[in-house]
Image (tube, rainbow, N blue to C red; front, side):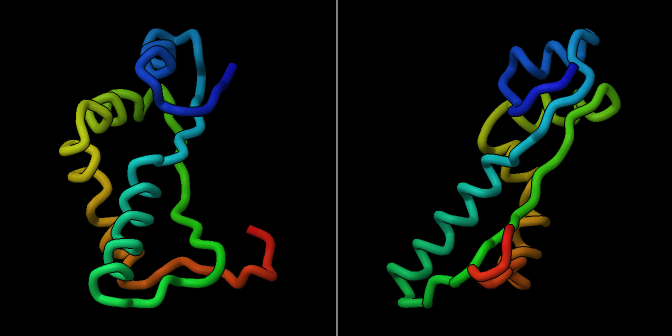
Length: 102
């Protein structure tokens, strides 16, 4: 059985073995990038990107659940976990044209 999202109950279910896999939408990273882009637009007048920004997603399995539980403890731990990916995506945005399916 699988599910989607990384709420504490779902993570515990993976850890205990009653759920095999969770889809991890990486909410923190998506929100951080969106906020960063809006701040840059508001303060520095930087144009907002046009297109589908695919920041990715992940899977939570029994082998990765402890790492995700540690990551989800606070916004500080989330930022530390995702910062490298955030920096890479801001430097090289993973954008496809609106005309392409995401």
